[in-house]
Image 1 (tube, rainbow over the protein chains, first blue to last red):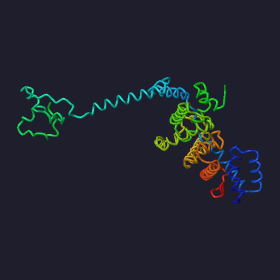
Image 2: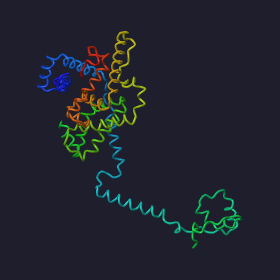
Image 3: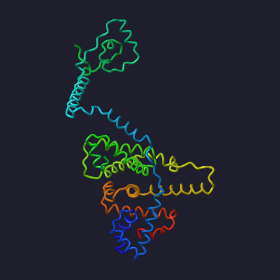
Image 4: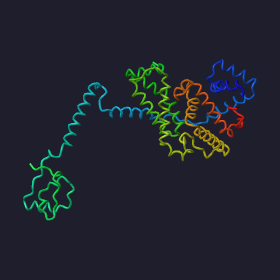
Length: 166
Length: 200
């Protein structure tokens, strides 16, 4: 293939797809008149181009616009703030919400020593109920349950794990 | 007001919903058809086309007319369709590729003469072969061919959509059509045998 054949490639493409300028069309016509190889390439391109007309397509369904509108409205409803709410006020609100969340988090994870100690079980009837509980999984409650220490064979928790008694 | 796409989009930006309706009316069919040719599923094509228009609408406030509207729209549509294919959401349809587009086909009339039925079967087989040949192209070549053949876009626009230069696009297209010529050679009478065609 000569250099001029390589250079004519994009013009061949444009001649087939209808995007060629008048100048490109003339250039292609002159070239293929004297080049059997490129005349053949042009015909092959045309054949492929035409064969692609058989590739099926679809039209949008009649519900396309209605469904799009639904999705637009759903997107608006999903927005936390109404569209008219000023952006600056949104940031202020968001900051307040984050501060409130931080305070709530601090209260939920504050040191255990600030929690009130469990009341001791002195009533024998209450003791019987506690004794018959199947499993006590709450370690905090278990380790500070004074009544359990009176049971035979009960082990005393390490001092540092015990909650101070007020 | 008819308006150019850019004028309509500036209208959408200014809050004129009627402008969005006009853009939708103008571009919905070609965008659905383009995505359908990539994903081969009508429902998925409509979902993705709607998503493309939703994204255009949501981005209206930051819209600047520094490129053609269709370049932007088809770039969104292309990314959505290719991501969908990469995520494999349409893989389940691979087994039913024969049924793709089935809802578009007219039912065969049992009263048709045998020759007419045979003719239709041949047409369907031909369409299927062409679709498989296009699908077998590398992703970028396939997208380039679909944008070039079926969408009314200039080379410059297609190049921008695909993120390449115009000369690179032309080279990409030429290679793609050469590959198609080889694959469709038995189907298209008169096509040169491989090794004697477009690229040689």
